[in-house]
Amino acid sequence: PRAPRQPVHPDTPFRAADPSCAVLTSFIALQEVSAAWAVKLAPFFEEKRYTVVSAMYHSMVFTGYMGNLLCWPAELYECLDADSLRVKDTKKWPPPVPPPVVDPFEPPSRPPFDPWVEAGKKENAIVMARLRPRAAAAGAEFCVGSWHGPVAFGPPAKVQMAVLVNVAAAHAMLKFAKGTPCVLAGDFNQVPSVSVKGAPQPNPPYTLLTTGTLPADSPGYPPARPGDSSP
Image (cartoon, rainbow, N blue to C red; front, top):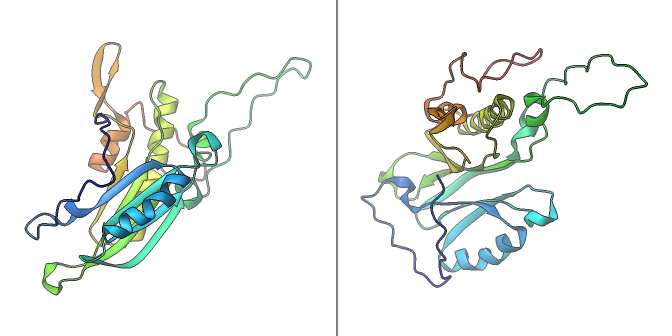
């Protein structure tokens, strides 16, 4: 569930990094940041001596061409590599199933929701960085990603679409990490369980992201499609 939104004044000081804390406590991953705000935040983070990388991906003006930011204290970590991409561009999506033949004199009907086709349309992006602590004894390099997942609840086909998009994001993070320890942070737009006919059931995208697997009998398991493999 989303935490309640609380305004934070730009002059609020950041808590100093504690060497005894876990590595990721000094990181900030932001989602749904408009292009205008991404620019305005640059001097703010510069003053705090934070490095910022972004993935601005949304093409709709009403969203402010929003995207994701990934920020870390430059004095503590050096950046060895970084990348940003739309997950739909990470693979060749299988072609849609041909529609059935209908009477040419009948008005065309709306095609059914195809999770594979809809997943291939999503613009959701991920921004990733490979970092190394500047203190030699602080640990080895690691990777961090900031991800904004699609909102998809309701019929199984929509949930299957969310599974496919999140699989692509997880694969992109693992491919970038190349075996290095990594963490994928973000706004996943998912909850641990959903109500089905009044009874709580595991939420397939959440299960996949937190366990790395999804049972084949799950209602969120996408249907087989020629040209692609299962999640």
